[in-house]
Picture (cartoon, rainbow, N blue to C red):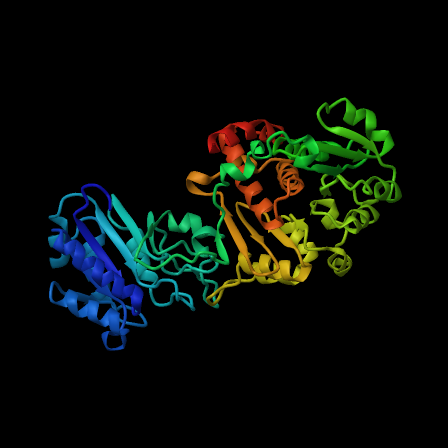
Length: 491
């Protein structure tokens, strides 16, 4: 709670979320707070635990009704007396005497919301106009937000009601909706409260955590030569198109691949040689030449797509996939299959990682993209998590769906969510070439032997952390240079 805050308004709903609100009201009252409780629902239909909490609060103070389906004028006036500037009514007069900030606690609807909010337009508007300074705290999730998708549920008329919070208190763990879509902005700061439940030792869906230093430390292989740390090959485009692949190759080397080779057309050798020193070069005229190059058993990972160009992408991608080693497919390596995505899916193998942004995703998975773009009219709403998991099952490999909320999904349903929001925001990543660096980071980690889901998750975290470490003025070239500092900080 905000320092000095001694008055609170608690909005309780008709389910267990409302029961939590009654408990919160009673605890604040016991600490000397002045508390007004408003109840939207029917007490006779409350779940058993919530009904018990309702009765316990009634022994302490009154419950002011907000009747369903819509509060009447008298009830709204009572609420306005409390939350609006210059309260005049008996409730407001009592609250106005309390020093400090007003805290409004939203315990209307929580994680089980299946339909949009209706009949609460004026109630939420009153809360949004609450007297300043007021703090808004949500229990589980702000009412109106789908806890599974991070999307506000909308009515058939397109109305989307939700009360954004300054602070959201989630019980036991974060929900996907705290991390996805509109969730981070609407939830504000999210705090997880331990309620004594045992942790799942291997949850299917969880946030992306900072990598362990031990997983990135090359010293673990003491005395090993460069090939022990893997050989990554990045397939490049032609003359004037090499920038993206050079960004990917530098990132693969920075993250610890023992050596990295850029495979480019003969005419592009001079251009790339002028820009690269630690990256090796190989002249590769066509798919046949690439196939011959990839016969080297020491090659442990491949990256194809950045700056590749669409004209020769299909045969080169086919050559990469035929090699059967871990591979990152990005950019043109994805877009070239827009008219025949099934042909790509048939050639993929479990060691692959696809890294589409939403536009590329829509080219490969148009039906899933349409579901994601459709209004969220009921809960659980279709989410970016649902889309990535369905795409991964279809493709038979890891799919990394990029964005400020990035979802990494594997065919077995395992998924990781990375939200670059709040203190973890990295707005500087909205720059050309940043995705190419991410593809290179994944390829470098694959080359070092990391499994696809782990490699993609680690790369996403390091990618955003490097952007934050550099800060304003970032260009894609700076990400690889900022990475060593991030790695040092982990140790």
